[in-house]
Length: 446
Image 1 (cartoon, one colour):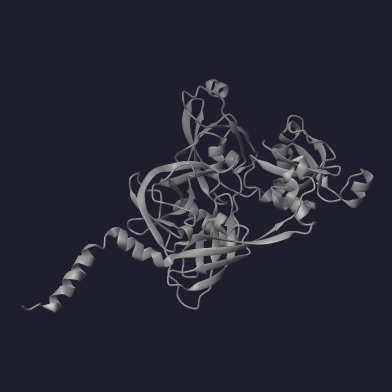
Image 2 (cartoon, one colour; image 1 turned 60 degrees about the horizontal axis):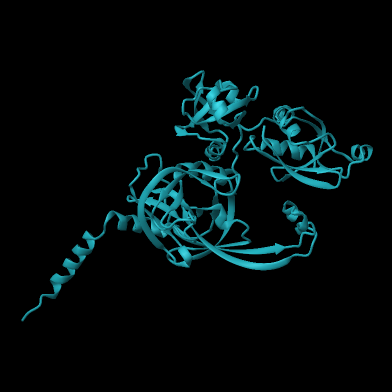
């Protein structure tokens, strides 16, 4: 009996080749660019003496004055190299509060990484590693042509199990996910591929190996449901983070409010959903584009708008320079208007403060503080409150001192002007107001 050994190897090779499905080829193409991210966080806790008064908002101040307790915490996530220079796209929550970031590649190379920029509103971040050798990377694809039922793959580091691949289909598109009381993430891709802790920040791929999303969230109340940020949204954020280290969202000069059933009846919406434009700033980009008070915004770039949270969530990925198509109802007719996102001009800060907040303010000083018996000589002092304005409705009054604007410290007029110019959501402004020796967080909704 004779056995021809030489003929067996080609048969095995052919069989193996036939098993290399598009999914296998997609994994082979992308997996070298998928990284595991390990972070170290040193938490500093300090007892707030006012905690019994149920005012946790002041915890951050006491951390600066009371001796902290230190503890070290390690967490992990995933990321994907998006160019040969070592830039890695991941989730903001993966690297938030990290004091040290360690990255491991699929070939076991290890690097320390630095944060280039992070954005909590989109839950995206860019970190960077430096290598003397060329690094593998994946170019960002597109997500505007995704199909429900399309097969997808997720690669990540779930539970510390490196380079784990799961597969499934796109279950739905344009999902809105609520994270906390006032945070809504919009237009998520919903998939049934397993996405577990540690997958966050990893790539979502189509069967061609194109990067179509960043795996971000799991729905805790159900099994087999995962969510990813569409890569078209991420592209705008990535460009801002690499160029500026932050996202310049700017504004358009539009103030909106929810449509309740009475308003819907008044405007004869006949089942349409949307938000009502209640103010358009003079000389703003929205004003120049022809938006008017009383318009109903029903869609943004073709995506329907149901309520204020939906509107804010969809606007969160647009940055300064973006051009946005608004579909609006006016006098029962649907019309289109294109609006460009801009920064709030320096020359408009005072008018913005007056018309949007309903406040007349001036820079504080030692002389002014002594003359008016103020407890601080920092910040911006409220001189006058416009009746029935956003500030008036929540009870602000002359003599109040603005110490923070959207959690940015305001010690001077220069600080205040810069903080106003950086406002990225004029429909909700968070102020820290000092009245006497007490401080209060208040939210202005024009």
